[in-house]
Image (cartoon, rainbow over all chains, first blue to last red; front, top):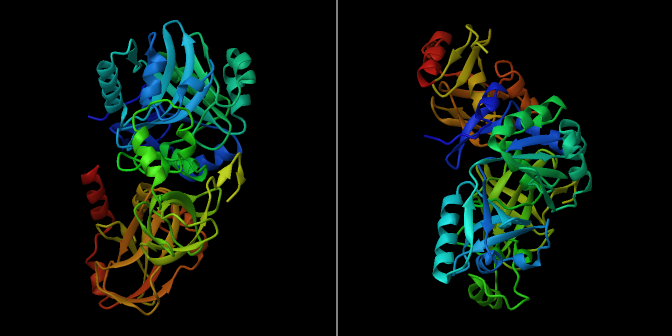
Length: 363
Length: 128
């Protein structure tokens, strides 16, 4: 039996095509994935991302636990600020990628938002580490919350029009910052390459917010558009660009790994060994020059050796097929490579993601 | 959308329209385009090539996935719908109008042995 979010009936009533996504029955699109994609680039769209898991970290040693668990340094966070990080195994393999917010609300010091498909494993891992090290902290599984992302250049204006009470927070919130308002938690974060907000709120209030947003013209968008938007934005998807078999250093995420300070974290020694070794694979973008569609697992032939597409699709804003691919060291932007498409070999040009940011085509 | 009664159908969701000259136009059904989602690419067969019934003859790709199209009957490709190369979304808008390719069947009788609209609908109902 697939799990359903509190918005399930709302999606069905809107004509959504529902699919199994990591054990959840989620909307793929509400008619046209491309129209939803373009609505976010040019206006404003909303996504039900309640399948993602909120985990609150409370207790005196919350920070110490997170500093051991995460490859990025949560110690850098001032209250109200967010940080993107990977959580690693000892061998540097990626267990999950997540966002950590410093909240400082009562006993709760930090809030994590993790992927749906890995949430249970994440929690078990965090509990295990906490127990082994005897940290005085607690991980609270917040399955009582729903999550709605409002994304696009008009996200701010539409959100204020839909919920007037949010005005003071939404107008002043900085990029990658978050603020609590009563039982709501509003973050200026997203997964589309556009301005926008992600709102965690009690499940019982989610339908009302969704309908208020729809009433002011915010387009309901499915996970299909979410995927093409994030790929154009050059953002990784757990399970596609990274999993336990690769490290952040091979996944375009070296910038999220803190090796400058002396902080001990799980996976650090493996990453330092890997960094010292030559020929580290790298994650770069591809734009297809010939006709066809790039897809995950297609092989890439480069002058430096073979690589593989990790995510590929048609980019509605870019107007051609784009991909992220793991390729050998030495491959550089503007190189021409050959990809084995379903219809035969095709030429692609290497570029540095993102392909699109704030509505503009960059790569 | 209902399936036009004048067409013939395959279990793999192609439709076949017989032309006055005995050739057939082949497309994908509305059910198929809806299942695929927005189409972004079609790879059409080479004119002059011969295929047997059930052989993979073309590929349509949506934002979601790639899908093979199978020759509904044996025969030779005599034309392709060039307009789809730059506008594959025509298939989403009008699945029963936007044909993919034209074939000259080896045996015109094969077309009559395909599913009719009612038979195809029965198949759709049975998988729902």
